[in-house]
Image (cartoon, rainbow, N blue to C red; front, side):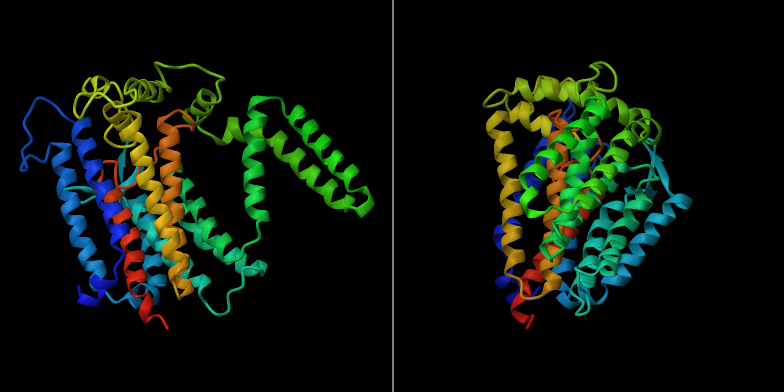
Amino acid sequence: MSRSTVASVDWVAILLFLALVLFGWANIYSASYGDQELSITDFSQVAVKQGYWIVLSITMIIMIMALEAKFFERFAGLIYVISLLSLLGLFVFGKTISGATSWYNLGFMSLQPSEFAKAATALALAKFLSDLQTNLKLMNHQLRAFLIIALPALFIIPQPDPGSALVYAAFFFPLYREGLAAMYLIIGASASILFVLTLLIAPVWVVSGVALLMGIVLFVQRKKRPKYAVFAGTLLVIVAFCFSVDYIFNHVFEQRHRDRFNIVLGKEVDAKGIGYNTNQSEIAIGSGSWLGKGWTEGTQTKGGFVPEQHTDYIFSTVGEEWGFLGATSVILLFVSLMMRLIYLAERQKSQFSRVYGYSVVGVLFIHFAVNVGMVTGLFPTVGIPLPFFSYGGSGLWGFTLLLFIFIKLDANRVNEW
């Protein structure tokens, strides 16, 4: 790594990254803590393996920073194609873990290509949007951008791994920043709200409420000659969507997904079955009170009451052992990192770097928001790890790769003109 790179690199983002990784390791150690002593040669211990993966991630960082920044833009398309092939290869050579064929067995470890596909998709999207011919106001260009985002998600869903596929919604953040009409975000948010409302109450009442609101809008705007055909068409689409929710929920979703939605929406209480993880997680977080029980002193954590606590439910360890203060500190660290990355993205001189930066922010935000919401019972359990925190080599390396490519691009911004 050259002196100029060291001087121009954003150390604030790196320090926030290190704080999250090290605090994450401390909580992984606590969540997997037993009576045995920690031995750096015992790979059966979760904390030891995570420690080695952290060391190897530093090697990855050095390699990324040693590359020319133009490498990522020049080979973005090739990296994306290789990523898609790695996802397709799972259907032939993949290893099934917890019901999902999402891994390659390398002998000494398992590798999950979907974790690296996020960075590849971000590069491909940035390359496409930074093309001089691209205009997101044109429908065919919008469709090509949507296709870049959708392909890896479509390859991930059948594994089945809907949680990882959900993350690709994050790439609409950079699209919106680069000029995509807000209509798409409004449609997505409206569809989500209508879906949940229809699950809670009968679709006829949801449709009646929407029709009433649209009628009020038409009455208020009657002097402006509103487009009645547009309102009528919109209402027909909403009616069709609301009355299809029941079919989608019962015939497209799997039973485990239906159960998780029903628990979150309060339609079912299953504290000993499908809702056990979330229930125990809430108990652990609530028992931490303001200051927590102390590191490695969490009774829920040491008792192993929260399944998968060192992976997707690692935030419950923070809540129990570090309390409200510790949980708030972790949230502030994530928010600070994302706000810093937005600042860095806005100061980029090239569109490629800016789009990639917003893609990084979007992926981190979706992972952070969904994971914390899942652990606290606000969202259904979908199996999304907490970036830099949850146990796993693929996850740590994937997020490290995603972040430090952008840090390298930012360090090179002085040479972009």
